[in-house]
Length: 390
Image (cartoon, rainbow, N blue to C red; front, side, top):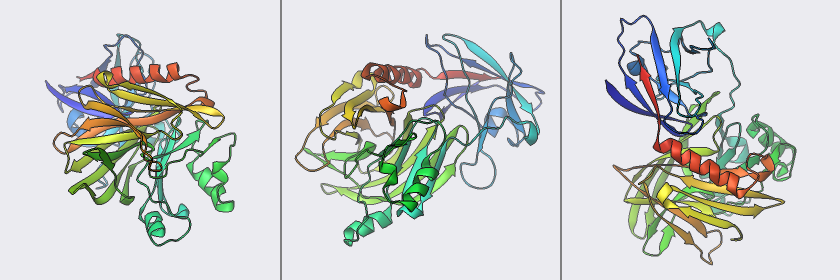
């Protein structure tokens, strides 16, 4: 029996494979070892794990209820062949559940709206934006950088992550950009769907990266190019590349593999980086009037702040042992004050999650409810679901 680690919802899944091509039926037993309910964690199945030649005609059935679950196929390398079959189980505390892999026609598959969505936005200079049913984000591209460098109005020089504060479960990215086309700045005003009143500037926003050398933090410029991998009912994922940048004489190379899964408030970042053994992910302090929680031993840091007429929590979460320190960094430089998590780089890679909870959305009415979510999220990524395929 071989073990393979997978991920979704930004949460890691352990899969044990013991099936053969001669097996007529394949069953999946999902086990939850924690004393909390498990949901919105995505299991990634591959042709190798299922020992099949094609994923297109497969579905996942709950054996007890006979229900066909929502699934999503993903072509990771863009060659036209599907590489992953995604689904999200739901489990009670310290329980297990059985599913069957079934062959099914496309017309009989359970349909769902593509709530996990991302795209390049050329009509707003060159933003790249992403969202799911709970949160939305964007960051900025080379044209926006060039405009600033050439003194052209309307540009943005930032590799920070901007939070779009939504309070509805349906997609808003296209709607908000469309109304901005009609009336520039419209999405900065409160609506029944939410607004963008989150200032990024050159800060790290919600979880972007920096490298600390001596006492200072150094940051990249805007992303240089992008590639969308997938959108769908369970996950959106994409890649952002950055030009090499210099941290006090040290050349840093960086590539961000980013994904956001259904039901999660936290985006997953898988960073490929060269030139440093430690990278920092930061949360902007804005007016520096919020409450900081540094829980490095549990693998997370959080900033809960007054925000407009409401309150907002931001956070960075990593598996235990990968967050080696944190720093409350305050400087007179505009937008450069951040709460930083120092993350260990292993084999030129680092992985973490970052996102927000907005009180106005009614998801997290208090700082305590936000931190309860972070504690449970931490437990889940450190005790992944066990999936046995027979």
